[in-house]
Image (cartoon, rainbow, N blue to C red; front, side, top):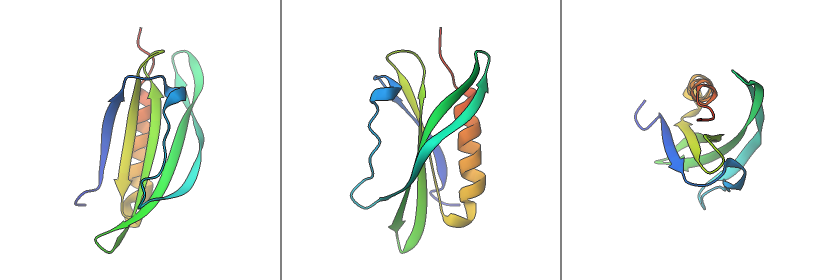
Length: 103
């Protein structure tokens, strides 16, 4: 749908220092971790979910910080309206799982 997407944001800081907070118009819905399988074995990625309203429609957003190395992080973000949340958020988690440590 329009404005439903997965985006990527490079951050020049370690993943454990990325502070993911809701914007003033958002509400924190959930946060936790999920397991991904990498060549180095199983690792956990953090995930944060927000809810908000825009143009009189309900929206959800997730943010997944993926460490690329000790000093760089890729934020995988997805936003969707509730009917498309399961598919789009699962796709964002799959994409995040394919990103990994460089080096």
